[in-house]
Length: 181
Image (tube, rainbow, N blue to C red; front, side, top):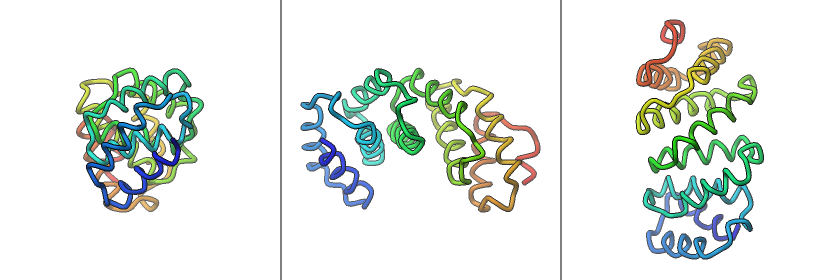
């Protein structure tokens, strides 16, 4: 199973997606016992299907159910980022999934995040908010804002800061300080 997911991930990552190959791999994965999937395979599968624009894939439901059965605490930080990006790209995932991901990230140390992680989190959750209606925990954006201000303007690329400002505006979050960076 891991090899099938890795093949799918590799083709999508290399932007060499073949619709028939994706369909065959997805069909095969759906016949397998999800309990046999490693956490990393679930994350790579969600990311791959989201980026490949396989938005109607039944695998999203299977993966989400498995994530809740296992608990997000069992997933690595990079795995959570992949899950988040895949579900956001596909405009899939339940409110419960996004709320659980928010809580999981809130429990982590934001000081360990690099600037790309911070700008990506702002973007992913602003997209999730836009698609799912009001679901953003204000604490998440407050914590992200504090980390942005702590790191300061010099740590971020101009494009990252521009995107952060745009996404903060989109969800109506943030004080005036991040907009002055």
